[in-house]
Length: 40
Image (tube, rainbow, N blue to C red):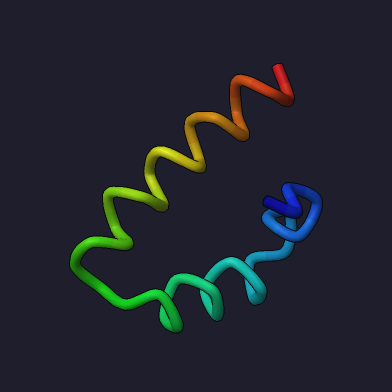
């Protein structure tokens, strides 16, 4: 995943909307956690 793109709220929301609302929500949370861990 291109993690730097996640730093842009607009890109993040666009990707989230494209992926969908149900299954992607869990995936998005997982990615957010992994991103947070990677950054910190």
